[in-house]
Amino acid sequence: MSPLTETVLFVFSLVALGYLAGLTGYLRPASGEGISEFAINVAMPLLLFQTMVKSDFHGVAPWSLWGAYFTAVAITWAVGHLVTTRVFGRDSRTGIVGGVSSGYSNIVLLGAPFILGIFGPSGFEVLSLLVSVHLPVTMMASIVLFEMFGRGAGEPAHPLRVVTSFLRRLFLNPLIIGILAGLAFRLSGAPLPELVSRVVDALADTAGPVALFAMGLSLRRFGISGNIRPALALSALKLFLMPGLVLGLVWLLGLPPLTAKVAVVAAALPSGINSYLIAVQFNTGQALASNQITIATASAVVTTSFWLTVVLHVFG
Figure 1: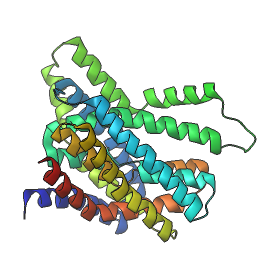
Figure 2 (figure 1 turned 60 degrees about the vertical axis):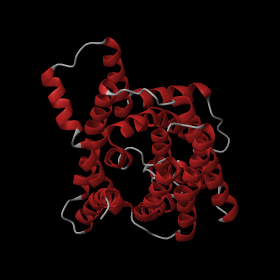
Figure 3 (figure 1 turned 45 degrees about the horizontal axis):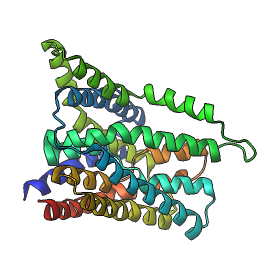
Figure 4 (figure 1 turned 135 degrees about the vertical axis):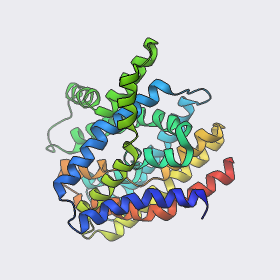
């Protein structure tokens, strides 16, 4: 077995173990929520803090990276919305759920340990640049869309409410706090105390396996309950259209090989749970989002291997 294949199977085996723990009742649903909260609120922020403090981002082109990646997000999001509304005849609010499901990658719970396992710390440095912008951009888009479509038909969106809600959610987000704290400490030039460094390293090292296990438990909670055809269509957009667009854009822009590979693989990851959370907020499309997350994550065992093979062939 090649090291690449072994790493892919290792990552998805941890997801499968989490799913089986929930399926068999070995862990209660409340345990899954607690594990997810630890991964997102403690381990991942410390991993991002550690990365911001210690990393060397030399050679990474953030503007080109962000431009290529988020252009693909916007196009895929729009296509997902149109497929949901025009092909499957759903309303515009469900169309938003379809768009988010198509264009939002799970770059934290699944992406962080996956990129670390495949490309190592240097690859995670590139991913961290995406995470730092991915959260604010998708959060802002979600809030704006919620203000436009999630309220009463005659109730207009208020710009001040949109901005206030965005800033509150942004600066209370543990991942953003981890990134900003790491950048602030890096700019201060002060050395990280040995004891603090050991604590941060110990907790950050748990981020990968804990996040993957938590992802599996989350999938058990979502399950599949109808809406198979639209969920399959949206999964195809997420797993093939979006990484294909990113591949073309990073190649046209001439991004460094490692940056290009991380961008394509991040785009090829299955959908994150934000699509389901938005569906719950809108009170529409919950089953669609749930099915799409489950189907895309199960299919990603094969499709991510495909895109890894492609980027290694194209970029070396």
